[in-house]
Amino acid sequence: MAKGYWVGQIVVHDLKQYQAYRAANAEAFAKYGAKFLIRGGEQTIVEGQANPRTVVIEFKDIATAQACYDSPEYQAAKALRDPVSEGNLVIVEGYDE
Image: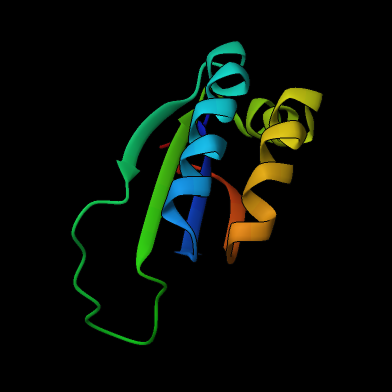
């Protein structure tokens, strides 16, 4: 079964307040077995445009990735993130040979 992923490209406008979001999202991520593969590390844009922060989170499958996003725990954390950041987030199914 193919894994599911969140791929986010974020601009953080208030890092101090964003830290509250990071603390709050831990509950949802633990509940749904999230594994961070990329969490805002150094990046080089070689084509096109990108926001300064990239995050990739792995889940056991795409249904679990979606359930985490829809969960009350994550939506409560997201309410802390929304006023202090902007960006793009996609939930995508991994490639399974």
